[in-house]
Length: 474
Ligand code: SAH
Image (cartoon, rainbow, N blue to C red; front, top):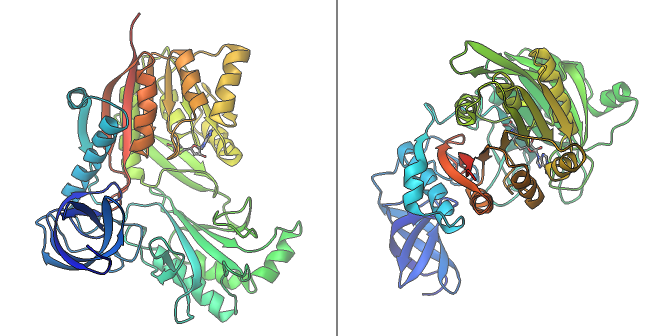
């Protein structure tokens, strides 16, 4: 087999990032956009010792699991790797991915997993679910000012103001901003030269209140005389604010300053140009008739799929089995969403989070929900938790962890093991690091009792999992 060869291959499996896998002459071929069950013709691109990458040229016989993708950009965009696959099959892919990682990386036995797994929770509508969008601003190949998304694994921007995962109003917002930029001769940031003003447009939507926050990430240094500075950066800003605020729900217009030549999207400093500093949303606590409300700063993490988040948090409460006497630690707590759910049923809740703005939001959220049995700490979990254990001999009946993709720091795991909570609830957005961490916990007196995959990210390969671990007696 040589580079540029055209081969015909039947797709038998999926890789972890959603590429189709087929075999030719003993080689595993990874073919992006090919679907399990397809017979495709593909061109060999890169050959390694045991596998190769090929480019999908043509689907010869389509798989019965194939569907017509809703978005015409799905192959160019890195976001929706599974859009050509039926939703039912997407869910199967996700559940298998978690189970396989738990077996392969975590060393769990498949018989054990079969006994403790619960059915995957899918979405009712797997489009238009995201409450947050981050749109790069730049120029297309013809030099036209555009916003849209980066073509998979590049920083080439493909113009698209209507991502089908986001809110329908985003299109009008983005087009309004582009029009304003053109009218006022404002340019987009150029990553190579570091020149130009507009880097990204962040849009956050509130699920229940219909509120919308629009945040411009600008290539500028914050000056103490912000009102004067903003008149220079955004000439005729009133015009922009007037047209944006006419769009249903737009409640806040914000500028974020980022003058660093970096891939990190947002800079540290934000200033409100018009309207509210934060966006407000709420989440329903199942079977209570009660909502918890949240104020969210531009920097704070907030779950991107509110409908599924309500289901996830309901499960977290179920797994926690609270009777009212428990002390709960919510690690990696963000703006305190899970903490506030737990506080309804627990005696006392403590949260730990690294981003100061998120902790400020968490404290304000506790106050607004009149929740008194809750306290938050700013810092890295791996610093705060061991410190508190050695200084104050803190106790936990239940620990919840919801770390970013890289999983829990080993110091966090070691401290949890020392604290011996009766139950640990692990919420994960990366099943490989989840499997690694669960193995350590299960080698140290914990047993995996229940777990469930919840689809928070329809069309994409990302998977959310919740696990219940119990401390073994004796
Ligand atoms: N549980 C929250 C947030 C989960 S996202 C929710 O459901 O909304 C993970 C959070 O961990 C983010 O808010 C991130 O800022 C925070 N984080 C990342 N690394 C951390 C660390 N080492 N220590 C504490 N918090 C961290």
